[in-house]
Image (cartoon, rainbow, N blue to C red):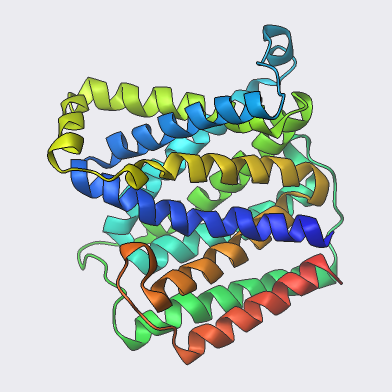
Length: 308
């Protein structure tokens, strides 16, 4: 169990690393959808090579035929989440755009486990899990929201109600929780979490690059050479592909809610580490006391949900 918990933390911890790497590529070509499409394409190629090295055969049509219709929605949902996040950052500001999806992930992850949706194993809801989830949410608020309130950095547009985008943020998290559950089931049916991650990345690549081509922005690829994008700027897809692979591996074994909770802890812990020491070219922002307290509360919440 300890090994699985470690994998869950690693899967989440890779997310902020991927984000930091992708930000360089996005900055160079100034087209978020194209940058994401390139990242997914690199991830798709990586998963093919990864599958060959681990002895996983190519997916057969007979195996694909065993998937339910919603088994192909992983890549679609990933693309929807990506698009939603791009717009939410502009409408809600960085803090709410991070917190609200996490709230949706935790709530819907618990519901998926409780009712066994998307072919997941039914995991009964207990008072300990509810208490742990509440502590996790409290930890997220302490880490993300409180420092921003202190520095008055929750920025949103002043005109109009933000209720639509706030609800959309929670729904985005619910969609992501569904994607994780679907990938877990696909990996189980195909007997390979690598294939599950590959299918998601392939579909997302087609959707994103197709969208960029229709918009006529594919020519921005020339900016990669012009701006001398470093080689590590293309590693985001590899990092993301491995993260999704780990999630697909974990869901059938520990449940969707647990995979999400551990992922959130890993994501926040590594984000704080990157900010504190200014890693990966980021601005150095030492962790505040309230953030350290929040991280402790978050860890206690994970212990409640996973170990007690």
